[in-house]
Length: 272
Image (cartoon, rainbow, N blue to C red; front, side, top):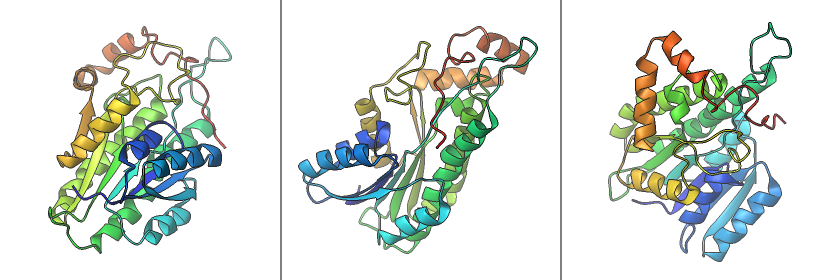
């Protein structure tokens, strides 16, 4: 698998940082984007110490024009990893007769980041790779976006996150069939809980919590195998698929009695 030039969003922490550090080595150029300058520079220092050439970009994936300019300005990419994302859950009702719900600014920010931010990364990358020659393996490039097991279910604790991740998975898989014929692999990562700062303050048990390094290795192994959907843990994804086949009232009866994702159990996301 040719991956000498790689662009990663969300590289200032979590999975994006772990992937950058895992990929860093001599002869490889990493284009790293994130919103936190100090943490992004910390990621860069580690990657440079491993021999990689690093180009940094302070960016917000919700900015369409800026993202297109950045991606197209690289001149050519073997791999793109769209890792930027946020999460958030419902809040406790302020009145006994009110429902648990997400504030509108949170809903809009999650969709802007987790869905439109992915599109702002993937679409210019597709356009760029279409102009590239095929490598020895017949591929022009690989583009990977992070979805979630949450996207397999209509989970009342995280409505916007579940919906945005479902859209990411469907878009990547559905678009990937035609893209593969042109030598561009589109992969969706359907993962469970990964031990990153994004979930560290969740006030509930997280079944199947995966170490971020193990998650990075699994994703890169899947890309090397040209997997269109990279799924882990398999048992959690399978269980989620089965839950989504149940009548809504039965699924909700189960979900509302679980500590995971109960109203107020997740920290409020940074909406700036």
